[in-house]
Length: 365
Ligand code: SAH
Image (cartoon, rainbow, N blue to C red; front, side):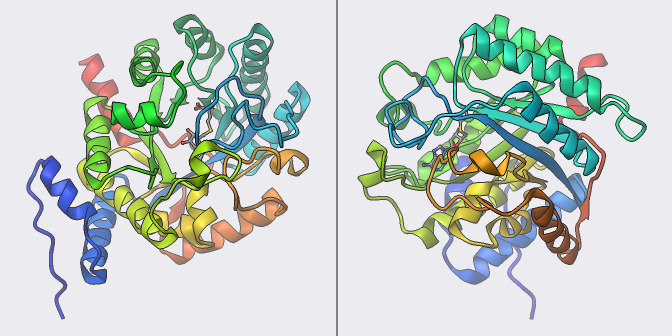
């Protein structure tokens, strides 16, 4: 039997997005999924790119109402990896052919922290240049809001991508999930500065935040389009009992999972040529969550490379997967499922999105 084909106007309107995100009928969901995969394969190809994730410190100066490593959470042993630990994890990443690394951390703006990041970038670049990776590992940073000068130092040191989630593009909802000292405008301006400095920029949101509506989620995709970002990392909100948002009602697990997958698919349909990650939080809700993300149009995976001894302490939310599984075991498991779904792994490549390449051509012409 022929499946319903989706009728989507081009370019898709905000109303179209609301209607697709509201889908609950399994046949319709499948049809959104198939369309997203078709667009992905046509625009970006079957490759899935790996970014090895190193969570280098859970020390954080921020107090976000949803996050397990917020400064007010005292039930946590705080850690910061040293230069050698970071280099060891990055070298393992390069040895596996992963091509890119993500350095993520709680937010700090002090000189010691900035110095650690700059040294890490220099060292990773110096130690991972080889025949397969002539420019060394691609380096993505995810270390929060910093000054223009700091972003420039990171870029000059050799990092080329930066992830800074907007968390929600609705300024009122943003204000409800952050302390007063943080603002939507500052975070958005950071994204603009990052782009101006020369980074490929990524952003993203949490899905199923208490009080968030389908219109908010559709508006988040409008934000991704307006800010012309190159990559997206988004996943379900997962309540953490030691945070203020942990006790507020939010949609059930299944609903958050479905909405997260639909967000991936509708983002892919709206902006075909960007990179979209199937994030760890998907796997916290469902053991096959990341594979599902790929099946709904994502093309990036972030295998965890944080040393096992500190993984438990980087607990943004409960139910984080891979707390004890070795990075090697995870690699084998992931590779098998990626190949099984008929996709390929883009080993030894930075895996920049066609969106970036297109902009480069436009800028130089
Ligand atoms: N300090 C860095 C890294 C933050 S942690 C920064 O500001 O970019 C990375 C992401 O984890 C956050 O951007 C947020 O979207 C997500 N996160 C935090 N708490 C979460 C929760 N309870 N459920 C789901 N995702 C969460």
